[in-house]
Length: 273
Image (cartoon, rainbow, N blue to C red):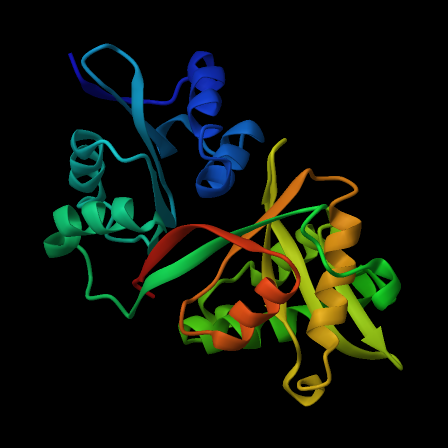
């Protein structure tokens, strides 16, 4: 009999095996579970009539559905109706649209809808950039204020609103990513020319996010050289890289495809704050 159940510690291996079937769609939720950052009550599993996992969904400040089973998405949407404090629904487009269709009358009016966000992957064979192209390096805590300020500008430009005002821990989260050695930057003559960071990682891939060139440094090819060099370093550690991007961001699409990223899926994001 099909049913919805909370993730229990004994179910983690089974859940991770399910998520690994689509590593680029599910990297964030798999990382949360594997690193024990998702509590038991934060992850719901849907089992089909045969008792097999047919869907999984993370419920936190963001709702992230994983899977295609219509009954699972219906169940996740019903639970999402009780998540009025969530700030977004994000994930594979069909899953996001199904969950939101079920929950929309109980949720706030969206502040933005990013209907199509291509998902890209990159491996060593596909990479056209090189660490020889740019002298990139890991950010340090001495750069925290500048990194956080630029990150806030990027988020405000994409989603609206300054995250430093809506999140009391924004600076602290930035510091934790730097301490984890996941934040990379490219400087020219001491000036920040490009930055990005790893947001989540599994044994199959690492998701790159926060791709940003400060406005005064744009138009000089810094993003191509900086990201290509950073990807070269990251592929020493991770077998593949992945990311997703708004379909209307033509410069970003061109950048990723120029560096060898290939499209492997499509996300959507419904924003509430």
